[in-house]
Image (cartoon, rainbow, N blue to C red; front, top):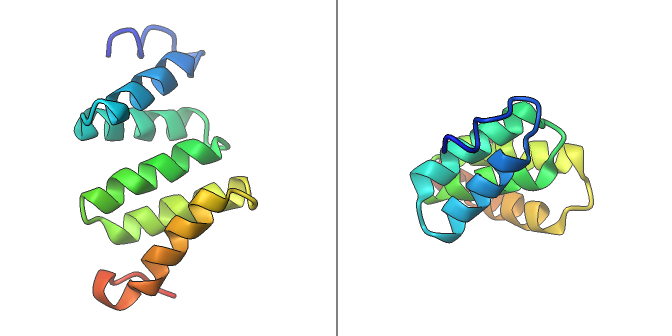
Length: 99
């Protein structure tokens, strides 16, 4: 984590940290990393998509839908984000996600 915060101008360590934490099943640390990554690189669609996936796992469906939507705004052709967003939208009644 200290490495991830070492250089405020270089988001790559944060990205590596977030992906490694996600792969290791360390969801809280991954969530923190992807939040920081999307704050540093708001145009990084894959970061938004992964943030959304982690938010779904926590049951934060409205926040996840916003993250998937942000991913699609940054990269409209990101099929994984489209699928994830559609899953959330289809469960909107249960999840409280607006259409």
